[in-house]
Length: 402
Image 1 (cartoon, rainbow, N blue to C red):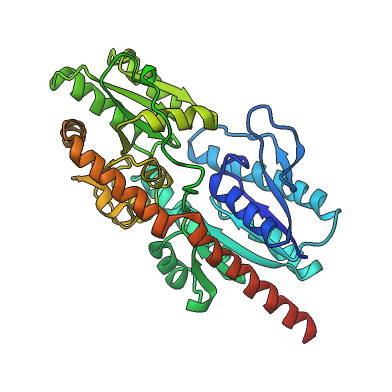
Image 2: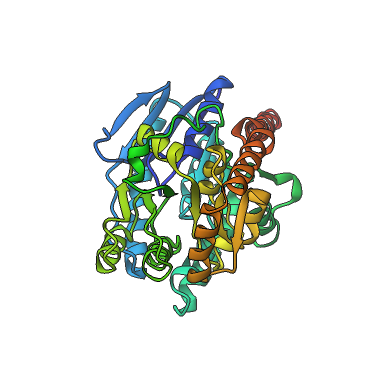
């Protein structure tokens, strides 16, 4: 039995669904698993959940400015290094897996490689240089070059890289300098046995005929403002008062988005739930008629896989999305694709799909089938555990050789 540490900074566990699925996969394979991550609301500093040890620090997010990012990363690195040391007191780690963003944890992995011969696996969730470009399109180039350097160092420190899609894999091979046998694609597939459509709750439509739902992070690059503005077009310009919008999640832009809704006079049409428990999410997505993926085209989103899109598909919801490269890979024929970043066309696409029930049903069934046959975590889990088998075997050969 090997002891494994997973480091994640941008979401608490088990709220981070991908990391929690990875934890459960490793436990089912007989490994001991510890996690260092930020706290969620009400979380203790240490707990054991389903035999996974969770070490958590109080999150610190000073804002979305460039200085704020640096301050947050310094704080997160320090808190993570301290909790990693606490976790290490229970025994050495065979592997440390770091998930990004940010790309700053390679020095911790390097230190434990020196003192314990611990191997490092990098789980590549986001493109930090492209995230910077997307948030600060006219920003100075020095931070971008610094992020590229951190990304390169993270890749080259890793014994193996796990990429969430083929676009990320190509970046590992080119910018990261990894060989093909050092990179494995493991998609963030939903669990169809847990995420599945249940009984609808008509009250969640709030007196309207249809319900459009969004679930996910609400940051500057996520396009949730597009949903609010599209809802305004649907209601004010196109005269449709029969569609309710429910937006699940939180993030840096949450307060601004609520203010935008209120400024547009849409409080009766657009509901923000904040972060919601699984039971509420299940009820909303089981009632909704379509799922919204409003991610605008930018350097990050075009190459990234959107987890929400696949969650909609698991709930048999047709998806309205902008035409992005990796969104098409995920959703295939289960989505309606709109010219990138055109808010008016996005609003029109919502109405057209709402008014075409046979098409909604067909797209929903195609999405569910795609999840079950290709995208589900059960198909990805084998590749994930295969990475650990190879890295652990290489570690044993290395120790035997010297």
